[in-house]
Each structure stands twice: as C-alpha cells, then as structure tokens.
Length: 164
Image (tube, rainbow, N blue to C red; front, top):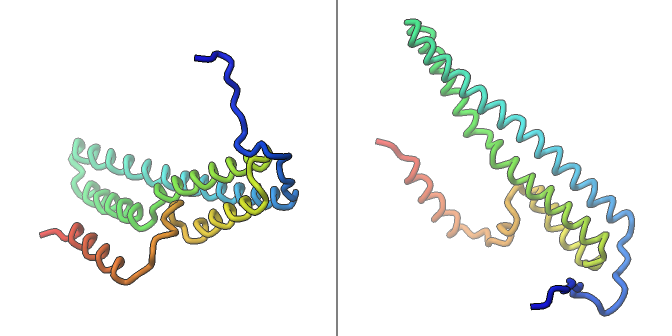
C-alpha cells in the first residue's frame, strides 16, 4: 500500500471551464430559497409535534385531577393536531428541502472547483428547479406518468387506509 496517495481530478485534460458569475448567483439564490423553505417546514413540524405532546400531557393531567369534560375537549384538540399533521406534511417537506439545499451546496462546490462544465451545471440546476416546483424527491421526476401506474398505486393505498 502506498502511504502518499493523492486524489486526482477525473477531468485533467485541460483547465476547468469558466462558469459565468450570474449562473453561480442563480445557484446561490436557489439554495437560499431551499434553505428558507426548509426552515419554514422544520419550524412548523416542531410546533405541531410540541402541540401534540403538550395536549396529550394535558389529557393525562385531566385524568389525574378528575376533569373528564376538559379531557374530552383536549382529546378533540389532539385529533385536530394529528389531522393537521397529516394534511400538512411538514416533516416530509423539510426533509425534501434539506436535500435540495445540500445538493445546491454541492453544485456550488463543484462549480467553484471546476469539476463540472457550464452545460452540466445548467442541466443539474434545471433538474433541481423542476423537483423544487413539483415538490418531489430527486430521481423520482423520471417516472412515467401513466394512468396504469396511478391506478395501481391508488388501489394499494386505499386498501391500507380501510378500517373495519
């Protein structure tokens, strides 16, 4: 084993391609938007979780102090919080935007180090923007949108949601 191995860049054929400064600015703006949405969704996810825990503890306290009417009202509030968590998937969204934020940061690093060409940079930024607009995880934007796929998925999810 050699102790003095140094990494080499795969594109050592010549000097790295020059990325226009305004393109680097667009990537930074995109990263800032992703970070802002990440923070928004993370904050609301935390608020919903804390609210659910606090109301649940309130129900327990009402049981201890024989406040059954208040416990029933708090039970309704817990139901509302859980319903809101399902209606507004803040948890999934903050994770999604955190990944996009990291991918944009990685793209900035690649651009600054000259490991990508301007065309590759534009293609990667376009793909990230499309995923941002659709709010779908990276890599899943290439799935075909055929009715047959949608029918199979909806049948499986409706089966799992049924209760007797």
